[in-house]
Length: 101
Image (tube, rainbow, N blue to C red):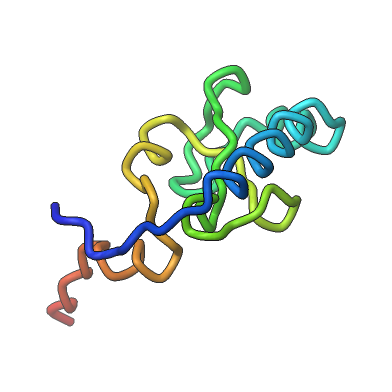
């Protein structure tokens, strides 16, 4: 799949936000999110140690490492999402065929 987004990321912003993400991973709030054991994207039960911290709006696209922009995601979903925003994710999801009813 071709990437249709342009990355003009500020290296200082990325470094700063990655440091914040490292600190956020150590918080009790994040540990509770992991203990639920559910991927935010596919909803599958996943062992806490296999969940990754995913930025909903990627840091490379201007996202920040704050509670409202990070979710636990299984590695498969995190890898599939890559640097896409939520709107871009919706555009690539296959549409359900209309029912025959």
